[in-house]
Length: 289
Ligand SMILES: Cc1cc2nc3c(=O)[nH]c(=O)nc-3n(C[C@H](O)[C@H](O)[C@H](O)COP(=O)(O)OP(=O)(O)OC[C@H]3O[C@@H](n4cnc5c(N)ncnc54)[C@H](O)[C@@H]3O)c2cc1C
Image (cartoon, rainbow, N blue to C red):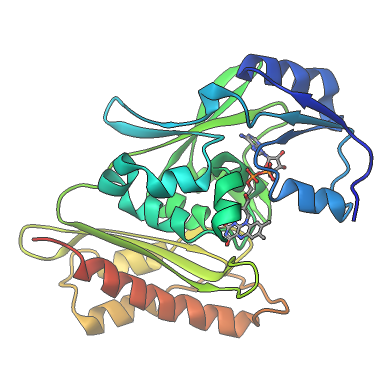
């Protein structure tokens, strides 16, 4: 399958890429790893006349610590996030999630910015970004703004990114003491995408009660979301099996579950409840008190 004809432009800097977006307007699309955009172009679901390649912009690649936060450049590939010593030691949930994406070829081309901008309802990163309350930096010709994860995912494959904006980085607060985490997913066997994926993060207080609970779920609905009913059902409680089970039972509350050839809405909702229970149990079991 071949895409429709397009012109390829390689940007050397964010400024240059922003200039090209301004110049070509609605006819342009950013190209990062190309692992979501190119399949869409081949299927003629996207037919941009101009591709602005941002994959080679040094400022968009890499992981740094800045003002107590961990900042990841928008064009940083999944494999770099999965293998980073800083991410593995201070933001392990994200490393686990990145390592679960697709296969090694996908992880060596796909980027965090591309995945978030594309916002596939079955993508892995959005669950972890929600649970970690990541902050997404968007730059345009008229300045920069930061959007919280909860406001970033708007609807099916729709984000808060406006025309002319580039997702330049995502930043996170590192894990605190007495925190456990995990990312679990029911994999679609061919692609590895999440039929349902759950990112769980739990911090215990000094008495062993759940002080902070964060649960991000992908694959269930049109966009990744925080399962706040689960979080509040567990917060302040002893993390006993029955309590975790009762909290996890709320995983699909209020969500209009998707149905497709891979799973019915009912099966997805049940997967969400089961994987939420397992993820919470596993996250809590890893906490060093
Ligand atoms: C075989 C296969 C298996 C896969 N399996 C999984 C999986 O298991 N889990 C999973 O989560 N994903 C999976 N993916 C998707 C993969 O992770 C993609 O790499 C990712 O979704 C998109 O990242 P990209 O860098 O390739 O973006 P691109 O394809 O280059 O771009 C995607 C979209 O985002 C826009 N965009 C890109 N970068 C930016 C930016 N910085 N700012 C603003 N807009 C931007 C583009 O214009 C485009 O609309 C799979 C893909 C393939 C081909």
